[in-house]
Length: 521
Image (cartoon, rainbow, N blue to C red; front, side, top):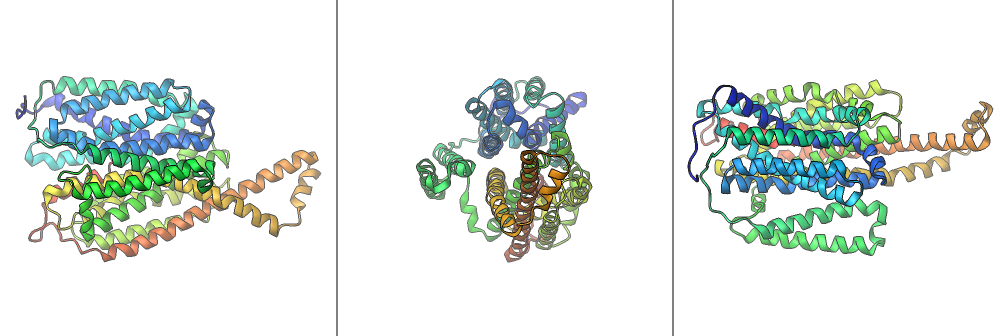
């Protein structure tokens, strides 16, 4: 069937096709956002420490990152139809393993496979969708895909919290099974016997293996550093040496191979380098802080999974409308200015959140999260336009694979890094409190209120620890605010991108498709 492409779908088949592809994309993104609110309950369900449960989210992100370029290669090598069906089936199988696993190792392995299969499906899904739209309506197809990019991620925490509280966290995976199999069956029936023009290009298996060793090694180092005492652990020292060696060899290999797994030679272009660095560092901070806050609201402040997830609901109000507006504004304004304003606004929001000091002040988080949603909606578009400046259209997919591969992996790193900040800063604040507070009248008040000496001391210690952990969370937000200010200055070192209507600029449709792809996770 190679080289054959059948008549496009029409009527209800076309509508069902759009619904299934959008649902498949939303399912993958939802599993990234919703799962964060479930982490404390996953730890309890598997009987493991919370820090171990975090591995199942960070390694899911690494799986997504590794699968994304593979999906792009498969779609070019053998077409989109069969790989998409296969990725849905693997997604359902790995979800079944997650739903019924009772120990960490098989569960973690299934989560990595779940992320990998989801990452494979993301670029294939968009390519499948656009092929069904006539040339004059491809902008409509891009708009349809745009509807299911940020929304599942921003709605994920509250819905995930509701699932965890109401029916149990394993129902996320049972839902995955039913939806993934339904999507695979519908797409298989709609596109049965479809063919495509294959591109004969060898897969860079060495580059893939080295990238997997590098990312999984670095993520393991970050995941286990706090628990295993970093440099004092021979095991972690060996992991660090292995990861660095893999990274060096991977860079050397990808720089010389003709068709690399990830084209790191694009870093020779200033705008690509600056755009990718800003996207990765910004997403590292955002994803890490989101995960840290939603977990600590439950563990430190006693919120339920649902209530912790609802803190993030305001982000969904303006994230998608802002992204739509930004797609129009970026055509008329210097992308460096828009990116700098966005990054500065992110910094202001995080400085604002860094002042949070009252466990009961739920309403104080609402407005900050509302503005954070606006910042998230306007984050990707100007940086993607900046990154693709003066890049030939045929190399857009290479730049996007590079950016998404590193950005999604950075999201996993960010979760671990923010946990390290919290782990390091809390003892410091407790030490300072002990040094500066020799008068324990609050403890005496608890005794006067009827607590026994032991109960009063336990209550006092819990309140003090809670207060100092809030200070540590504030420190993480202040560090992120400073980092975003640095990124806001960095983007001005890029070349100013041309507007789409200027001579030599890329077509607006190509730019729009690239901008939507950059928002996928």
